[in-house]
Image (cartoon, rainbow, N blue to C red; front, side, top):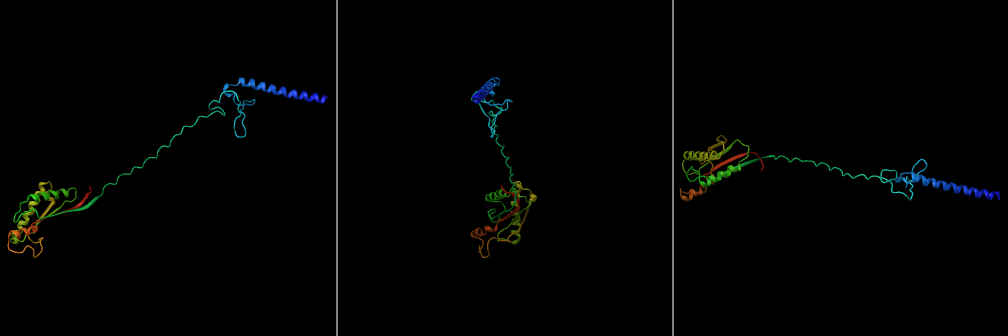
Length: 225
């Protein structure tokens, strides 16, 4: 009987202790700020956590305030990495190219004449256009004649013809000192031996037209357009 009473008294004491603990917890929860009521704390107000670092929550009170223990933490804003600077590749400077411009025109003069034909002027205009930009100080001009006439006469005629060409080039803005001119008479015909045979006639004169020519040449470097 005595032992049984002691057990009842022990059970009653445990029940009273639990009731007092619960009442104390409720009273303490009422004293804590509303934002902390959902977390279980010990007497020193240390938040209870399990072995995984997770907090123990009660079923009462609002959600934890930001930045508090076990509360929602502010999310870091994603910052996109700055784009890598683009390499600037400088365009290669154009390199000068060596060129030679040649004109061997047999349309410049009529038979036994040193005055330029209209077609001859057009041909020289084309030559002047093609030589622009070439870095050369010298333009070579050589005049020729056909074989009709004496050597002396043809030598003089060839010099007159090349002089006419030089004067025309100067009129187009080319410096006189750049043009080196000379006449070679009938010494270097364009026609081959045996061609244009016979006495002087209209057909022979027409056949010998290639021999009445002037050779122009300029060479040097220029930037390719």
